[in-house]
Every structure is written in C-alpha cells, then in structure tokens.
Length: 172
Image 1 (cartoon, rainbow, N blue to C red):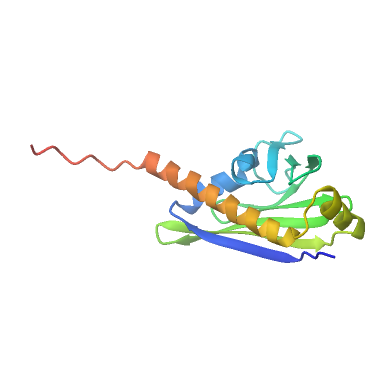
Image 2: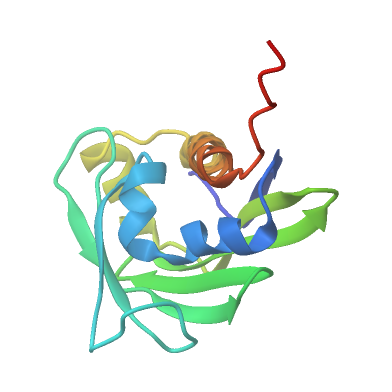
C-alpha cells in the first residue's frame, strides 16, 4: 500500500516575494499552474486570501471523474506564506503550503504538503484502482515541480512587463 506523509519542492523565482505571493494566494489562478486543478472559486463571500476563508477546488487526475473539495486557508502572510488545509472523505487531511523567502532580487519559493490525517485503505483503493495513481508520492512531487515552474514563468514575465528600464538614447 502507498503512503504519504510530507514532501517539498523549491526553486528560485526572479521576482519579489510580494509578486510571487499574489500568484500563489489567488486560488482562482491555481488552474494556470497546477496540472491537477481544473477550477477554484472562493466561497462564502470570500474574495481573497485570509485565514478561515474557504474555496472550492475541482481536481482531476489521470483517469476517473473530477471531484470537488473545499479547502480552508490556514495561513495568509503576504510575501511570506500561504497555506490551506483540505479534508476529503477517505482521503485524509493534507495541508498544502507555499513559503517565500527573499533571495537577492528574487524569491526562494517552496511548495510542500503535510499529511495530518492519513488516507484510509478505501481511499488508497480508490486512488489506485479508480484513478490509476500507483505512485501518488511521485505524482504529487512531479505536480509540485510543474506548478512551481509555471508560477516562476508567470511571475518573471510579469516583472519583465513592469520593468521601467529606459531605452538607451540613439546617439546616431
């Protein structure tokens, strides 16, 4: 049987922590970055990241149906950290976290998960048989890697668009 407990992936982003935080904490943009998220919408009147805010996420993996879950934000510190906890019947509870550390002109961005309530045997059966996920740990790690790369591309493109560097004069 598979097991999950904790994993993390990090990379350098050439953009300030505040700009990177704006991307990771805007859950409505998560489908742009995560290979497993189809849609996210804030719930209960929430319009942005705040501790206690809830959102609905629609997930999809290899095969099988899409499913919904309703995470709750557990940490929202602009420019530093964004985290949410999601609990699903049979699939336990995972806390997903983005940590941001200033690193020169950019940001060291880390995505991680911690399993705080393990998946049940039935949950593992569903994941392996219905969804075809036979090495969930490796799939989650690859998903985090791809997510961070897409966040980096978006953040760095945004910095380039805002770069007010003057054009050198034509001395011609």
